[in-house]
Image (tube, rainbow, N blue to C red; front, side):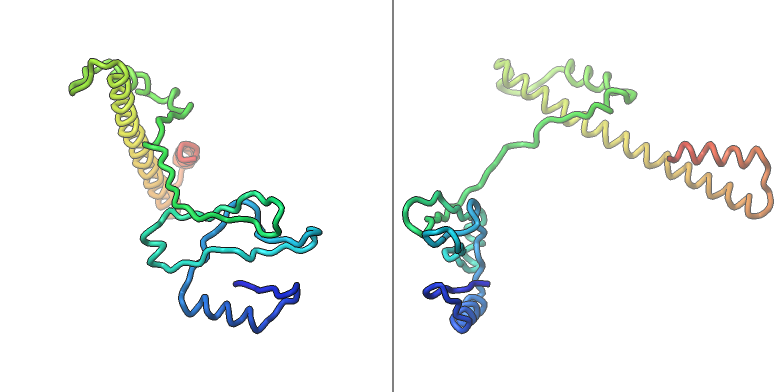
Length: 192
C-alpha cells in the first residue's frame, strides 16, 4: 500500500488511515511505467513513489487501456506523471511459417495450389489487393493443413499406444514371444 512522508519521517498512523481510505473506496492503483520513483531528495539519497493514480473499477471499465507514465525529471524534486488511454492494435496476426513445415509431405503442394488458384472479388485489379488476398488464402489453407497434420499425428500416436497396451496385456498373460517383444520395442520407438 501507500506510505506517507512528513519531513522525511514515516508516520505510521497517517499511512494506515490513507491505506484504509484506499481500501474502503475500493480504489485501484494504475501501474506506472518509466522510472520507479516519482520523488527524490536533492542529494538522491531518498526515493519514494509519492505520486500515483487511484481510480475506481468503474473508471477502469470505461477506460480499459489506461496507462500511467512517469516523465523525465527536471529541476524540481517531483517527477511529473501523465495518465493516458493508449490502445495498441498491431492489426491481424502476422503470417508465419515454421522451417519444419518444409520437410512435411504436402507442404509444397498446399503452397503452390493456394497461390495458383483463381481469386474472385472486388478490387482485384489492384496488384496489392490481389497479393494481400493470396496471402490471406495461403495463411488460411496452411492453418487447415497444419491442423489436419496434427490431428493425424495424434490419431496415429493414440493407435500406437493402444497397440502397445494390447501387446502388454498379451505379455502379462504369458503369451510373450521374442517377435512380440521386438514389435513392442519398435512401436515404442515410433511413439517417442
